[in-house]
Structure formats: structure tokens, C-alpha cells
Image (cartoon, rainbow, N blue to C red):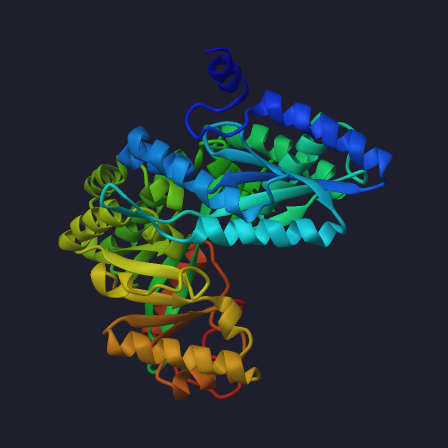
Length: 451
């Protein structure tokens, strides 16, 4: 009984891993030994990306089983002399009690990240997870447990802000970055109430005819002191502090209102595309919210296209399929955004009602000069055609890219070569001009946003 009570006092009940108290004790011992023998040790702070969405969508019982599975994946990645600890809901800390070089910690972090990435099957649910990992090293980043854990935590948040599913070492510059992030988070909470958000619209173009086939709504934050901020500077923070659902609903409502306004005055623009974050899509009321916004704005569902990342699509297979099928049955189009940067398992393209693939701009940027990337782009275009999907190339910036994409029958393009994101009135004017007259030229498009 005494042994059992001691174990319970020092271990997490759910995963039976050392808790924070036992970790601190082992970390203090590790620091003492490292100091005595002039060695290094490392702390890895692991956070499961979007784990809360799984809890919210399919329940805490499945979430608890998933956490146990993750613990079983992490533990074999380290030595028996190291410590794997569970800190909270979806946070784990690993103590690497002895390393020769800082790079050793990075190798272990990548090993853990790849282990977590493998799919999970729990109670008939096919689940996918990624992990963001921060790394701190003794003695460079701290001389006590609290400092080392705090530095690893800071580095983990930096990894999340820079795309998730990656690891980062702590640097001194991150402290400044964290302070800046806290300031933005505070301002973000009142931005909706103060009406500081606005939408700009970037057209999609048929690469054969030059006709505008749709527009994409892009949010901007008109910050009172920082100027106009693009989404990369605040969307991640909005997700982390729980504001992304409210902001996403505002974007969808504003975009649908603009689309309906244009249609009412005879402006033909194809579809209005709206980006949906993974957090927003996994919200249990997402489908109901879309229906309510369409009813409120009066926009017909066939004029709306929702852009989801591969991460959002693959988060929870069963729930995703049900929501997408319901949206598709209404006539709403579904696009996979940033295609090529996410999952290698492409079975979802046939199993979900997807209409469009948006080829990520990182691929388009390197064609036609990079032969390997050019091969990938050709393959994606061919695959899209085989699956009867529309392929849209993002980030088209020059005529060489345009010629390459046209040569391989890419259907549509989007990027600064055609138009930058525009205010509603400027976009309306561009649509009107393009509708009346558009002639392709070899050196530049006939209609440019800066004219």
C-alpha cells in the first residue's frame, strides 16, 4: 500500500508517467551530475497540436485513450535513463539526462515527432496527430529546472507559430518574440468589437481563357498602432487563445455578404472562397454556423467555396466525412488549400467530396527552373485531372510560371501576376473589366491590379 501511494503521488494517473514533481526531482539530480562531470542535458517540451479539437469533437474518453497511445509512442524513443513526464492534458516533458552535443537532442525530438505522426486507430476512429517540440539545453539555457522547462516551453510555442509539427531550440530572441506575442494577444481580444478587421479579395483566373472564375476572401487586421497586419501575424495567436472561431464566423459572414451584394448588382465572379482553419472546422457547430450564415446573407450555397488544409481534413476522419458530405449536398464546393505540404496518404481525395486542389505556392515558386519540383507539379496536375478535380496553382508571379502551368493544362491560377488582394471596390472594378475584355499577352497579363 505504501509503495502504491508513493507511485500515485509521483506519477500521472492517466498515462502512468512521472508527474511534474518527480520530473523536477530528477532534473535537479541531472543538473547536479552534469555540473560535476561537465556534461550537457536537454529538456524537450512536447505539445500535441490541436488535441483539444479531438476532445471536443469525439469526447474525452477517446482523448484519454489517445494520450495513453501517445505516451507509449514517446517512451521507446528515449533511453531508460531518461525521463518521459506528462504535465497536463496534452503536454509531455522529456528529460535527456546526458547528451554529448545539442544536436543529439534535435535527433531525439525528430524521432518523437515522427512517432507521434503515425496514424492511430482508437474505437474505430482513424486519428492523426502532430507534435510541436521545444528544446532547451543545460547549461546554455538555464541552471535550474524551472528555467530549463520555461525555455523549452517558449521554444515549443515558437515551433507552433511557425507551422507546427516541428521542433525548435530555445534562443534569447524568443523571449522578445514571446513578449510581442502577448501584446498582440491582448489587442486581438478587442479587435472584433472595435471593427478592426477587414477583407480583401484576390481573383482566381482560368489559365486558358483568362476569365475570373472566383475570388478568395483574405482577412486583414487594421491595427490602430501597428498598421495593417496580414493573417500570418495573428491567426496562429487567435487559434491559441480561443478566438479563431469568432473571427472565422465574422470572415465567413462578411465574405458571403459581399458575394451576395455583387450578385445583386450583376457582378459575375464565380465562387467566393473562404479559408477555414482546422480549429474552426472541428468545432461541433461548424456546419450549423455555415447554414445560419448562408440563410442570414441570402447567398446560394453554390457560390461558396470553403478552403481547408490537409491537416484539417485529416484530423478526424469520420467527423470530417460527415460534415463534408453535408456541405457538399447543399452545393457548397470544397477545396484543399496548400496541397502538397501535408499528408502523404492521399486516399482522402477519393473518400471525401473534394472539388478543388490548390497547389501550394512553394511548389509554383520553383518552376520551371527546378526539375524535381517541376516533376511534382506535373504529377499533381495529372493526378487532379485523373480524379476530376480542379487544380489551382497558388503564387503565380511571372510569365515563365504561367507558361509552364498552361503547358501542362493546369486549370486555374492565382497570384500577384494576375492581381494582388484588393479592396472590394477595386476587386469589383477588376471583375467588370475582365468580364468585358481580357486578352493574354506573353509578357504580362492584360489586366493588372496596379492599373
